[in-house]
Length: 238
Image (spheres, rainbow, N blue to C red):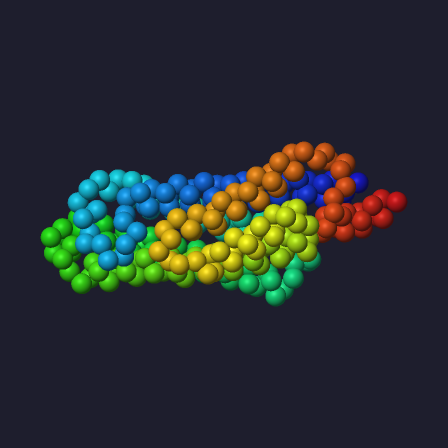
């Protein structure tokens, strides 16, 4: 009886944790990216005139990004815990690796942007007309809009594949992830808003998991890993 109760609690709390973490990540990242896109020109060759304006939205965006990263790590962790021993090693490796690489590149871009702001505050005229600004601005643009986006696409493909095999989400939701991931992989980096596709998809599946978690009762049978995991407990009680 105790073992069955523990399994029930695990089925209820683990997906809920994943959903909450995914929603937090999506909301924080979308807010941060929108603030950045509205404040900084999409052209990596800009002369830096935006630095002379109001940079408080950019400061806020850079402050939100670390918390988005923490939520994303939690999302990855609870999803892997949810899959458990049914996790495919190949796709699990790609899932974890692409997620960590995306996060590392996101943080790298944020650190470079923050460094630009600090350097400009110390010497406004010298930085705006220097090669240092041009280099840092270009690297920030390329890392975020090329490499991070591609890793986000790979993460969506591996996540969609894991969800298809374990039936954590509906089939159409995983297939939608494939289509959006392909869009990210072949997208031109100058499409400045394309990166929002990634957090919006995470938000979609997180909301679905959360709703399904609240909808089903303690006695509801589930498919996939949960159903297989619950059978030993039933046999033991019998």
